[in-house]
Length: 504
Image 1 (tube, rainbow, N blue to C red):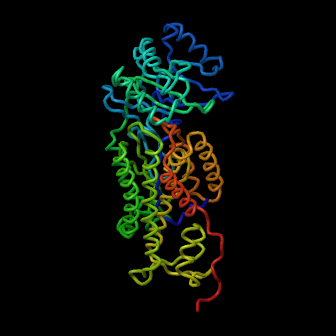
Image 2 (image 1 turned 90 degrees about the horizontal axis):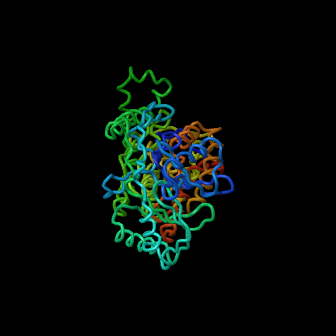
Image 3 (image 1 turned 30 degrees about the vertical axis):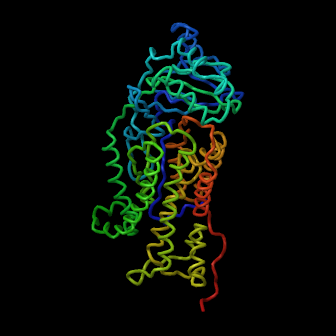
């Protein structure tokens, strides 16, 4: 995978990895030993608090976790279960589940290597907030039923309950029926998830009290963090488009007037970033998904590594996630390709343009193929040519979207893969993509820093959706495949030599 360092900017929708600052009470399915599902829960239905605390201490110290075992896991730790990050308002009227890094709690070593997160203030699970035994019986006998989800067993689940059983009928209709019954019987006090058990790939239902999903406290106000990120990103975008200043960063402060030379390229890149982000938000609004403030990540190498944007509520289903994830890259690829074509067709405004060696077009199959198609025999190995700078800026836009479309972690490509093929398949594809990116990083410094950002900021997992069983419609699956394919065309090198024959 090639990521050309010649380009001025890159973009991706990063999400912070919980390995840096784990969100409190983040429910996630995980496989431990023998592919067993480990449920970290507080079991007050079977044991009193003292016995439970004693059991927890033994499990934490020496004892291996049993299959489908339960334990209480308080504090600011990440619950390795279903991937539901806590973020509900206390009144239960608005689901606010943040996916990935909240980033108001981020301390940044701007310009160069990584984002360093402030430690968040720990939040404790209120031990009094648990589903009573009587409510569990109502859920089992009155909410779930033989015509929706026939319960065979249940287990305590972090103050909630995990139900195993047999799904009857279509998952989407079942979720709608069960949710309606639960609201009629119990009001809005509980949240239902219909997920896949990674142990046996069978459906499970998870019910948790909304009150257990507490919003996270952050060290820095959102507006302040986003503004700081934005200001530094503006500077690095300008800097990246002024090659004369890149060899000596300290000379920038003595030659600030030269930064204005990078304004056209910075504006084009900012426009492409804006198109990408706006299209995400337009589609998200249409399907009822709330997005947080974008945090643009500056890069001294390529100007910008993209924007980190939170998903603030629980995504209803995989199709809605696919729509939102694919909207930004599709718009960015479209605009970027139009600008690329315009750059090859239109002459430079100053009559000179930018002198480049044709070998640079070997960095991208899409850019190299387009150059060969439009320039023909003018494009010869070893013979520098003059191109409109719009070509370079448009290429940057394509790289922005290509990096964003890598099917890894919580990038747009990772979300697309998850929405199309499910959690288990997307996790394997993510590991493969990160491995290939790691190989590329041995030869490309941009790929190396991108790999570092992915590893530390958005390895995942993607927070669980309300209903994860239903596949998207074929037309949306096709859009997802197009995004992934275009990303490959941009990142893969152009392997064919350009003509060495003189132009007629």
